[in-house]
Length: 137
Image 1 (tube, helix red, strand yellow):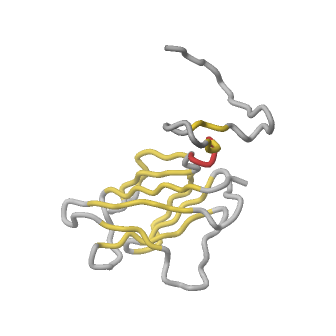
Image 2 (cartoon, rainbow, N blue to C red; image 1 turned 180 degrees about the vertical axis):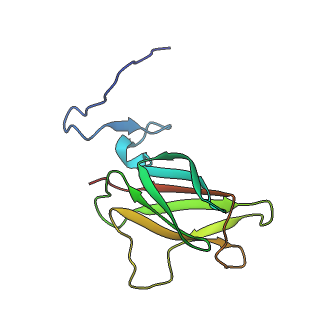
């Protein structure tokens, strides 16, 4: 087995393009497109606190089940994708949703969201996980 040890990968044609061949060998994908650009794992009850994070800062408790955080490095546009979940001993699981304000579009420098119970109610959960995929600025 071969091993590559490096501190930096740079594309040959373009510095930001590093292609990876698929498992079946039929296609390639750009490595950077598949990487999470930000994520956070935090306690959303009482005094909220981050457990672990990447490219996020300034975690804020906006209200019951409503949170926001800033990106350390901004996203390129507001067309990024978020995934996440939530759980607590009292509430089995939850989902994430954008605030109901139709004018509140995703921002490139921050993310605001609700953690909802399966019944659709904003809920403070012990464990909340958010992952962001998209293009960095």
